[in-house]
Amino acid sequence: METTIQKLKGANMDIDLATPAADIAWQQDACPWNQAESTNSHRCAVKNVSLCPHFRGVEYLDTLLCSYPTATKAAIPGA
Ligand code: SF4
Image (cartoon, rainbow, N blue to C red):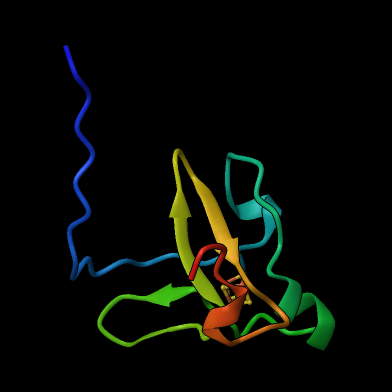
């Protein structure tokens, strides 16, 4: 059976890499922007609010694509 992947716009995501490791049961990399500024204020995609200018989507299965410190579209491979 052929596998089909559709690209559907408008997902209202809620993603961050800012949760302390002690508060989650899985391994998670930290946001490089938060690390550089010693903060926890930067979030990748905040539902109903905003997208980080460095957010470049999610790769299967759960890998975040981040362009930090570049915030231009030139940071997107193939763009
Ligand atoms: S997209 Fe990158 S820089 Fe922006 S909040 Fe997420 S991990 Fe941090």
